[in-house]
Amino acid sequence: MTASKLPIAEIRNVLRSMPVPVFMAGLDNEQSPRLTLHVAAPHRASEAARNARAALAEIGCDLPVKAKQWDRGAFTSHNSLEAATAALTHDTLVFDPTAAVWRSHTMVELAKALREAMGEPLIGLYLEPKTRTVYLLMQLAAFNKDGFFDETMRMSLTRTARDVLVAWRQQRRSSIDLSARLCFQLPSYPLVAIDDASPCQLTRSTFRKARLMAASAVVLVMAALGFGNANSARAEGPAVSGPNVKLDIGGGFVNDDGAGLAHGLFTFPLGDQFGAHVEGAAGLLDDEFGWGGSTMFFWRDPDVALAGLFVSHGEIADNHTTRYGGTGQIYLGQFDISGQVGYQSHNRGDDGVFGKVELGWYPVDDVRIYLGGDLNPIADMGLAGIEFRPGFEALPGMTLFLDGQIGENNHEGLLAGVRFYFGESTTLIDRHRRDDWFALIPWLQVGDHKKYFDRGKEPEIDK
Picture 1: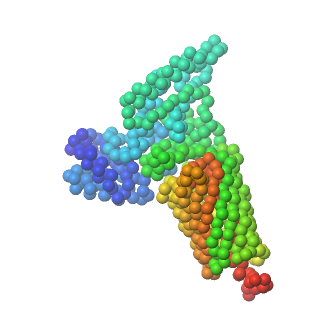
Picture 2: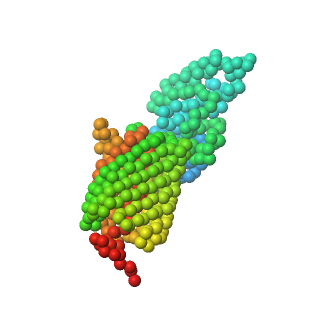
Picture 3: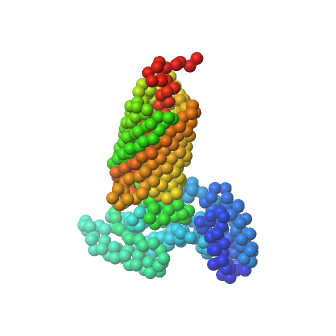
């Protein structure tokens, strides 16, 4: 059976209901067609191929099927959208539910048409994903006319670019709606080179290439894997969107004692790639006053990861804990993995290495659920909690939170409260990845104060 005689609609229905998600599939070889599946689920490509063969056989379609595991590292190693999507090119595009692959191919076609129409003055074409703007980098020397800038030429090329875009939209009616701008120097925010002929701009900083590739992943892969939609899509940006503040008030219990806490965190950018925060907290635990603070400096790509160094300190009565270490977080779509590691000192002798790990999940962009653990010389603990942004129009930055702990020495604690964010971001996931960072104060890790004293008694020294 040739490719043109295959029941394409039925094949799409089969792929849509696959137990292993397929984000794209294509046919090659008209006379002896072969079906290739592209799968993102780790180590499940062979399973997807087996399932597809069996399901296609049930509809009477005996078709050779192979599956390819999507390799993020290979994808982000390319310097243009054209190169990144080359491995996703097939004779016939059979299954592309988000249309991300098809749209990427059409953008490459647009780049070819613009180059043919505008000629040598056009150096490169770059996409800014958030505003869907194509920047046309022009050769300034080409506009030199007898020592003056040729404004007539600029206006003519602007009209040419507009006409090409209009013709492209008419031909590709289901494609994304793009706008174009002529420029002689690219803006500082991340752009994706569309075709291979566009020079990759790597001179602005050490991380420029990584930023370009992260933006490429936003354009294509995140859409293809279904990690977001039109309302929650995010493009790569600076480490901190701007100076912002987080304030929260909570209450609950630790062991059998009541607890209350007021907490504040100020985060601010240090250039484009780096940021810092200053944190403070004060509260009561069983009528004992406690306070703490932390400082952190960090690098962050809000679509990839964060890495930072910090120092933090917490006290309850005469119980003091200080931590020095590193912290980091990896962003995996709606999931994140974060951790801390370093050295912990305690005024009563419980010094040593500590480690903390946490897995977070955003079932929707305004809810985060997490599970984790804190291993430290005082008491190892399990952690869990949830944060929810109701989205009230009058209080768009307000969230509700619930944090719990359980661990050694019968340790247990629960703290609930209300939190207020003041900054540019809107959704909870964006506030966590583009604005503030999580608390670092060892507030409840300063030790069970009853382990060291009981209503004024002298501490017992372990033999």
